[in-house]
Length: 480
Image (cartoon, rainbow, N blue to C red):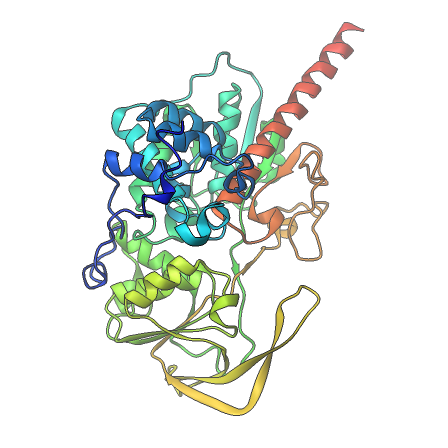
């Protein structure tokens, strides 16, 4: 091990080659190339193989990162893939879109002074290689089970649960109101971060594994929840959260002001070849416009970088806190700055100006005061510090809240929390309805794909225990 690993002292951190900003501004292709095999091994060999791997501890999936880094350094890529896939259903997706600077890489023990191991890029390389070499195979359970499980939502939590349940032999049906599989991975994340064929090949793998998909099927409209509960032995609700938060400010209803997800969905649908009215009319297209994005998370970063690629005249991002307090990935902020996005820190919208269409965003400067109960400094407006920014298109990227699922599913007994998320018993992951489980953002609120995968895997285990115990109870009753 000592010969191959611990190379961080003499080998500098090196990400895969990044395309120049002037080039990548013109298309939606991924901005990083793929590691050459030798470069991936070289970077993996920088791992210190520390006794307490903080990278693994701070990964929601508890990925065996030091182990598959060591295998990569030794050229044992198929073994590295098997180890990576053992804890993560979508390692090549997480390798692309996880905020590694806040999770595994941000907690690498060699980060200070030597720069972290490029864990995400190596993870992506391992699984992309596995796909190319044909190591990724459809699921063939050792035995088929008669019980079926219905999953509402084809996003990361639902898909992770579907794969895990299928491995145990359950018959799995996934219901989703959209026309494609993937949830926000297909419609919310732009191609320059996650190209759609990466998601679509996972869909094909699940279909080849005999997972059934019912798309354009909205539960509560096209099929009732009661019907699904009769049809399946257990149900999993993994719908995510899609209700956009709004701004309480004068003029917010003016034409030219749109929700971030509407904008991103239109852009992604257009990239997939769909006819999108908002793109064709120009109402959801940034070409030639002064674009202002309000928000500081990863969705805001997706919006500003999409607007650049659509040919916006100017792109500004308003955030009421400073850079250090920004919830989005710092790596994404850097990419956006390279591509020409202007960040206006410590600035908040007070109103939107315009007669028949938005023309300006009226803002006020912010001072960060004393920390609140959560420990974050409280934003305070600075009197007489107003500025008007020209805007032809304003995008609201303020986060997402859950929809009213008890009403949408016609299930008034479905328990919710004070925040509107589904209330579950975390030990069983079951809701207030027997045999109905929940996972992902609809339980924890808007979060990361990697957390949704973790929740989906955990829910699959709880559903397996529930159905197993139910079958044993039925056998005991039959034997009496």
